[in-house]
Each structure stands twice: as C-alpha cells, then as structure tokens.
Image 1 (tube, rainbow, N blue to C red):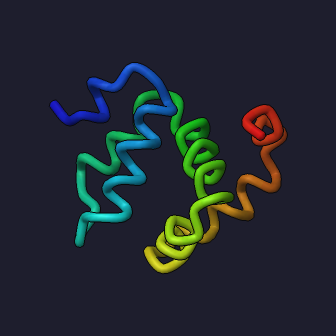
Image 2 (image 1 turned 45 degrees about the vertical axis):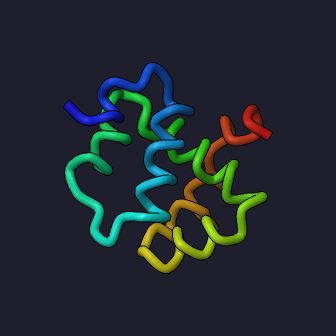
Length: 83
C-alpha cells in the first residue's frame, strides 16, 4: 500500500505527487495512486495551485510532459475555488 492510498485528502495526495515529481527519476505505480482515489481532478488542481508560487514545480510539470494540465485547469471552473 502506497502513501497515496493511505492519504486522507486530495491535498495530501497532491503533496505526495509533488514530492515525487521533484525527486523521483521515474514515476511509477505510487505516482499513479495519487490520482486514482476518485479525486484525481482535485489532486491536479492542488498541484497547479502550488505551481503558481513554485517556479521549480511549474518547470518540472512541463519538463515531465504534464504541461497539458495547465490547459485543463483553465477549463475547470472549480479551480477558482482553490485560489
């Protein structure tokens, strides 16, 4: 059982995913678990919320091929609730 499956909230899983994005050479099953607890959209929104003030995270998101998340957030009205 990964830390993501034990986490109690989307925000906690976003923190775990961010840590993996910043430190793991390869993202595997544990990273996927962060988004598969029926609140993956909210996890992405929390990651993007943090990326607004963390330039390193924003760069890593793009470099690792998740840059499409930024376009997705623009189309998600719930994003405004986190700002």
